[in-house]
Amino acid sequence: MSFSCFIKLAIGATILSVLGYFALPFIPFGAAPVASIYATGLFVGAIIGGVATALYPSIGGSGSSASSDSGTLYVGNLPFSATKEEIEDLFRPYGTVHNIRLVTGPNRRPKGYGFVEMDVEGAKEALMLNGVDMGGRKLRINSAKEKNE
Image 1 (spheres, rainbow, N blue to C red):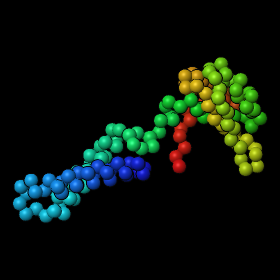
Image 2 (image 1 turned 135 degrees about the horizontal axis):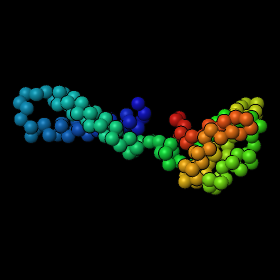
Image 3 (image 1 turned 180 degrees about the horizontal axis):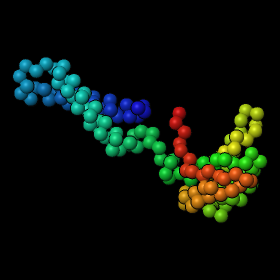
Image 4 (image 1 turned 90 degrees about the horizontal axis):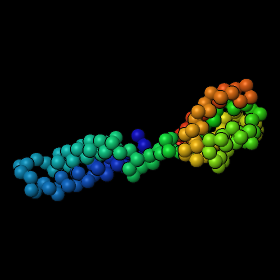
């Protein structure tokens, strides 16, 4: 469970339990102990908070919007000899290329993948490059996912 999900559940449970506590004098429960009313409020709040989190995951949290609306593409299975200029030439027909990051290891040698940042519409069109041959290797191109910290 993410931290933002936990916070939403806790807030929902707390609000309902406090409302239940203050509504206690107006509800004819008889000799119902206050602790059980508070616990029922926590339970109901957790259920409502869970439903709200499931229905609206991006409200108030760190929802991942980069996967569908981002102009960043993951480019995998790159030849180790690939340069930023070659990659830019490959993606330029689909839109403006803003940045190219080729991932390297600690010894500065390429790891064979990278990221291309471009306009959102161009990135959607550039997904058609998936499977294209570059330097004898078939490229894997997907929308980049936001890195979870």
